[in-house]
Image 1 (cartoon, rainbow, N blue to C red):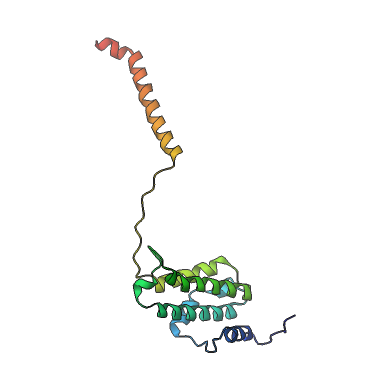
Image 2: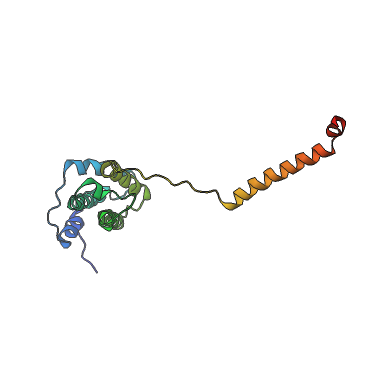
Length: 167
């Protein structure tokens, strides 16, 4: 059985220390990014959750710095394993934060990831979408509909008095 932790931020501090990061200080920019999530709306332990988000973001930023230039961080059109690592680590970190603080609302995750994409991936090129063929059943229904309509029109005209009177 684990001991009870009295201080509300003690779990975060112990977590930071257990993975070898004693310095959990963050910039104002990361603080603003975390505030944009508005965790207080959907989270019972919003303050602790936001501290986790700050920590996860600081690690993410550090991992991006290690990658180097802008083209190395873009995840599309062809993501390299090196580019995926910070992103995967961030999503894993957010999952741990959600479990630790009981803030498992998907809307929180989605808001945060949207803020991350706007901040860090806005300069990446948008991949071209490849046109897709319609499903075969839809193509078959349109082809058969036009074929039947053409045959029906030909049959109606052949049986009508209009063609017989004209000749």
